Image 1 (cartoon, each protein chain N blue to C red):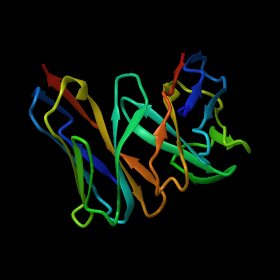
Image 2: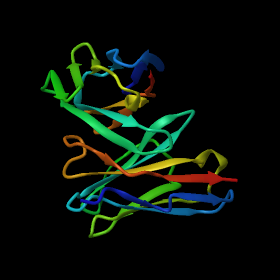
Image 3: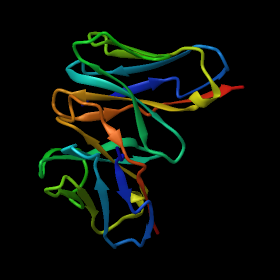
Length: 111
Length: 114
């Protein structure tokens, strides 16, 4: 059974600092990994999708890397802003067609 | 382009009742999936429908069921509600196979069972 872990559970940084969020998974047989953002009481917003054959994806200030063999992905957010405050979740599609989510990292960016 | 729409947004039910939640996917999307989110268990996959067929199912009891209509709209039903079913239920849509495409989520339906 795929287990997805996100560390740390919470993170507080001053505005302008770079953010590094980690996601690890136990079974490397995956189709893809997706990073989401969730604001309180809201649904999830897709940030980046990395296919299993890719090593990284970039969108604006966001960069996500994937090391399938070691079961790790990292989401980098450059020059953080107060508007980046949210919970960030990673989700892994395993080869047995199961979608597993991490518990999320709650980020607070202090102005 | 309208996003994923879920109705109702909030509802309160009594133990033992049943509930039906509705989801309208993004126009042109044929895959609809459902998720349960609780503080204790986090976000868990319920099931996925593609072209009216259930393609995949998570580890939930048979009280949780769903269906998809020819216009890709989907409904989720929970029978014999239990207090532990109180959660945010999220629906998501995708243009093709859920495993290979970006997933777009709705705002969710907040269910409280009393």
